[in-house]
View (cartoon, rainbow, N blue to C red):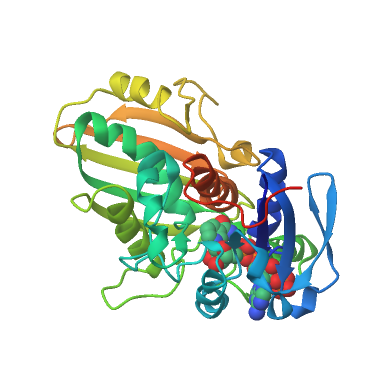
Length: 344
Ligand SMILES: NC(=O)c1ccc[n+]([C@@H]2O[C@H](COP(=O)([O-])OP(=O)(O)OC[C@H]3O[C@@H](n4cnc5c(N)ncnc54)[C@H](OP(=O)(O)O)[C@@H]3O)[C@@H](O)[C@H]2O)c1
């Protein structure tokens, strides 16, 4: 038996990665359809060995679809997810449109897979923000061990997190620097080439940005509403891979060595922490990988029961496409869905 899978936003950064991950992980798909805007109708995209011709979302009938992986932004999701769910498909959405609705589960399978069953209320499951996904994968085992009270995180987020046009902007601005051409920021509020920008998403009334707010609210929803968190989210001139410098205060004592051991045995985590030049992971090395890498684990003597660490992951994979497909696998493995069409 195979599932009928639709990928909406199949020409985008995340959508293309989703098609790749479906093939790599041999997801039990009887068929995969690639959808995007009318602009991309007929464009070819790869799904493993297969080449798919992109169809236009607006003309597509979802009646036969079991799982719809949505990755086309909030506006498209707001309009289409309820219609697609109404046609009987489970929508796994990458945008922030549904994440904060109490009756829509927000899932990182290593952390709260059990909540996935809640998809039945709306037919929608939300995928978290890329920075939250990798953070909670590392926080969960530490929370289980020593109970987290407060987290202070500074992010170093790659341009791919802002879509394919943002990657083009870093590339073209970098070229312009070498050619001594004028640089006019379009996608980012300031020049991103050879620079860092302490703003991701819009400002809120309290001075934090929405990206910072998302990390707080999503960590509470996925992991534990009692955890306090403050974030500073920064865009850096890296193509793929988000990094995070994290300080954690625990209720109970935990040494750096204990944390290293806990994280070594935790699902989705790989510890690379050699305390020598190069003995840590950088975003460049995380590209194309599934793991959340944890390095620079050390005790923070400025607070009681404190740790400092460095977390890196491929934002297009664990931060988006991989996590979405792990959610779909969770639905299949736990028999929460059945294929509408039985294989011949
Ligand atoms: N990048 C990340 O790390 C990351 C992580 C977590 C979540 N997300 C979320 O995932 C979503 C996609 O991000 P992305 O980085 O892949 O963006 P992207 O590279 O800009 O791709 C956007 C995709 O959406 C499609 N699209 C736009 N308008 C459409 C419409 N009216 N109807 C149908 N398809 C439409 C585009 O199709 P055309 O090519 O035809 O325009 C394209 O396939 C966003 O909601 C983003 O917030 C991204």
